[in-house]
Amino acid sequence: MYINNKNITLPEDPDTVVWKYLNLSKFLDLLMSQKLFMSRSDKFEDQYEGTFSEPTYEEIKKTAIDNPEFLQYYKSHREKVAVSSWHINEYESFAMWQIFTQNSEGLAIQSTVSRLKKALDSETQHKQYIGEVNYIDYKKEYIPFDDMFFPFLFKRKSFQYEREIRILSDVTESNIKLNEGLKINVDINQLIEKIYIHPKSENWYKNLVIQLVEQLGFDFAIEKSDLESDILI
Image (cartoon, rainbow, N blue to C red; front, side, top):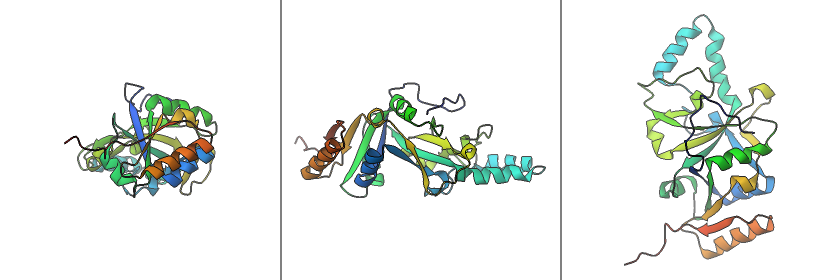
């Protein structure tokens, strides 16, 4: 379930629109299992995930002189935190289509921050937190380390285009081992407000998605992206 953490920043407007871009197989897995996959934080391509900026690391090293386990704990903690990434944007993003869908058979889930919170009520085993990612200069700027989630809510400025908001879960207390990640229960009807079909997809693909969604017992609004709609002149 969603837990509010006063240290973690969220958009002020609960109706802020968020997106997840994914392929058909991952989308069907979400619907059929009614579970949201969260990746283990150190499995992302960005090797800096869950780490600290240089100024913060230097500060931590000083603290760890008398307590060497302190630094080791931060390193190993990356294996205990799972992340689900979403994109903040009022409109769909051409760049996100390009990056996160490898062919014309991708989809985008449209939701809101408030919907994410409500969708997480179905999960009772693990706690979830939601926070907006901050983008900083890792060579110059400081990441606070007074909250264990802060390393997972800061990224380098080169990733600023992602405009990311994250669902976070820490399984340390559960004493379980994460391999690739964690699957959590979600209320699919709360999670998904609308589905957008890839702008370069064919009509048969849209019809296929509609048919599959109906067969699985859902009735989301589904429409094709208009990024490739006919020009007016």
